[in-house]
Length: 458
Image: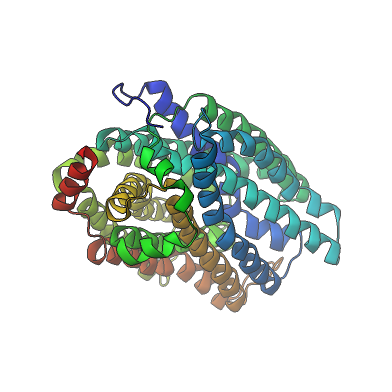
């Protein structure tokens, strides 16, 4: 099944693709920024129990993500749904995601003790399953919407703008909702419900405004031989994919740690939780400028070199900020601006990685003769979840190790120093890890691209 790809992507299709990440992040952004505080401060879960639960939840993702990707590849190879390989799954996932998100942030507050933990555990499993059913086909669909580098870069940019829209809407609106209804169960429930409904509507736009124009015939021919174990061959042969996985482990760990401790940095160290909204406002123009300028700079110096340069600058900024706040009390607004600049440079690797995933998929088809976007993207998503697991569990554990006391009028000096280190030094280390992956493992050069293009013509 090979659709005509001679027509160019329309603006509507690009916006529609961006709506996928936007809709999902209306609720998923809450997980990194507010879920730890919700569990510890609202539900009363201990740091040790939460760290354990986070580990168990993400073990489920170790099966969930690649299983979902392989399932999509195999089902499409067998049934050839006229709507495409990925879009039918998005339609199924959207209402499930909204309902499970609302349940996660409301139902556990109705229970106490073991019952509360059981309800929390089940609701989180259901939410993560629904998000996987949305995210894996959405991410995999980039290669199916276009088979040219130019349009894939445009779709990556559209996804970047969608990610910014969804993430910033959440980070701007949710603290304000808590400011109105209080840092309470009611505030979290109302805020999450609003985010879930809005996110569901945006996800429906993603479904109706996209089209899969390039479903490779090679995927159908190889459909009967598609196996979960194929991914081990990918790790062995595809260095570019390995580089992306190492990169995602480091940066997703960083995002999870900084997301978990962000509220504590602003509330307990800087004394201004609402400054998180201001930081989000500051980062919006920075991110928009990054998305607008990055494709032009990448054309001149190469995307891999551009990403490496951004990561190095980010590491320097994080290290300088760590050295400063450990000895000087800086205003909250200064911290917000400084940390935003550091995260903006590191975001180059995050916002522009999707086109590189498409390159890794093409490279894998060149190496193995199989085009399995779902399996590869599902495994890439798995490494992102593993990174998130590591960051979430370590972040919560290290927060406890610092001596942080929930509900205390004032935190100890060791707790405040620990929060500072988790917010600045740890991100610097993670950013350097991502830089190493792109600098020393990534191997798709201009010569390799020429060979892939030549193979496609045969």
